[in-house]
Length: 161
Image (cartoon, rainbow, N blue to C red):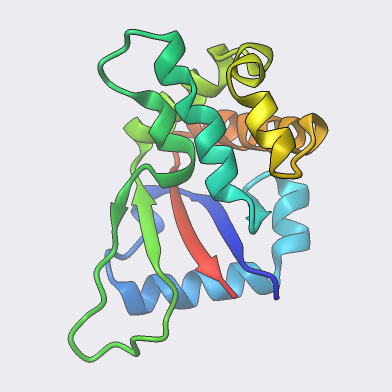
């Protein structure tokens, strides 16, 4: 079974802070993801996003930054609450507003993947992850967040099964 964390960059003025509306918005984007990936406004991680987050948490051992920007790329943002009448099977959604997107982009642009891998690589290798798999996810997120920040966009995150 595949389960994805789907990221989509969008102007905040185009977003409704409503779970039902955002779930439909993200579902439509998921259906068009090939075009959206090509346009650089969407990306996703299949199953392994928690490991990518764990990789970024290693930055905590490397930095003294109290803002903890390493949590922003994967789990940063605020949950978008279901309305009282919403279908509870709808996907969990998060919204990272443009200032957080800029912080995430800055973190991804400045963190050294090699230094992170030196801290946690042995553990990840023991779990079956290759350096290249995590590097590919890192590069995808770095490019995605960089483009989103340059456009002053927010990022909506949804989990799809």
